Structures are given as C-alpha cells and as structure tokens.
Amino acid sequence: MSRWVARIAGLVGLALAAGLLVLLAACGEAGDGADAAAVRDPEVTGDPLPAFSPTAPDRALGLPAPEVRGTNFAGSSVAIVNDGRLKAVVFLAHWCPHCQREVPDVQQWVDAGGKPTSVDIYAVATAIDQTRSNYPPDAWLEREGWTSPVLVDTNDSVLRAYGLTGFPTWVFISADGTVALRVAGALGAAQLKVLFQGVG
Image 1 (tube, rainbow, N blue to C red):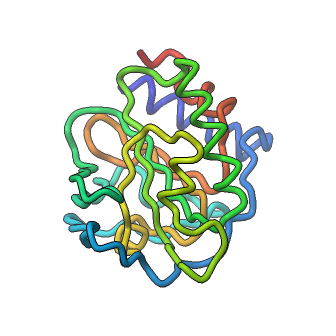
Image 2: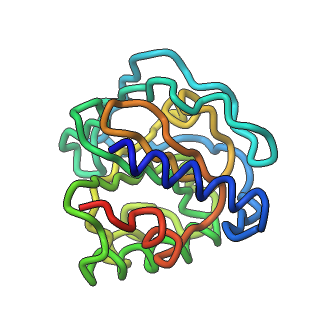
C-alpha cells in the first residue's frame, strides 16, 4: 500500500513538473438533485475535506476520507467506507461531456481486466438535473455498461464533503482510509493503468 501511495505522489510530481497528467477543464457546478422514489439521501460521516483546486497543493492528502452510506438508482445500499481496501472514486455528472467520454473508456479498461483485484472503483452520480442533457443518469450508465457500484448523491452532500465542484474528479483512497490523490478531469484507461501499475 505504501508503494502505491509513493507511486501516486511521484506521478503527481511528474504531472506538475512535466504536464504528463493532463487536467481537463472541469464541467460546471452542482445541480438540483435526484428525485427517484427508490433512492435515499446519502449519509456522510467524518470531517469534510478542504476545497480542491487542481492548481494548488492539495491540503486533503493524508486526511481521512469522509465515509458515505447511500443507495444506487435501484435503492440498494452502497457504502464507501474505510474497509482496508484501496479505492478509486469518480464523481460524475450526467450532463458533463468529459464524464460522457470517461465512463466508456474506464469501463472498457475494467472489462479488459485492467483493474487490479485489490482496488474497488465507485462512481458517485452527482449534480443530477432533469433539465440538462443526458438525463436520467441511470439510463446513461446502463447504456455504457457501467459495472462498478454507483452511489447516488441526491443532494450533492457527498460532492461537498469531498471538497469538489467539477466533473469528472477522481479521488484515490489508501487502504488506511486516507486521501492519496484528488485529480480533476478525465484520466482514461491509459492514466489509470499507470496509477495502478504494480498493484495486485
């Protein structure tokens, strides 16, 4: 686990120094929230993370990630909690064109067996707005064949707890439950492969 954190730290340094990790312009702000009857508002515990800026040192690194318990679009329970496993959490907005490109790219990488078995990927569907394009988000993710658990952020409380405003944003969580990295913009399969190189 410590090697993974060191690898991420090294990649962040390379990204800042050489521009190897391209941070795309994030899509806009949070929306109106979901209104599906089967979905319940998520419960967030723990201290919120400092606001994230991709152009400044990240003050959240090493802090405990907020724990979240909620549901997917079918109303089944989904929890993003400290359970001793590495996590990659991607925050997605259905109307964001960067997210619309990211989802099939990541899913193709997962389908090809690229995701290490020791890593859990979660999507947080947030900024849900029925007046914007590509609504509803559950239909979009189903069309793309998304297989990782989806937690529905009905009221954007998870987005706020993680200190985020743009989409997509990735949060990588170490096995001890602390934040290892937050990255704004689409990473795609190529960058995920580099991040998880050597992780079993």
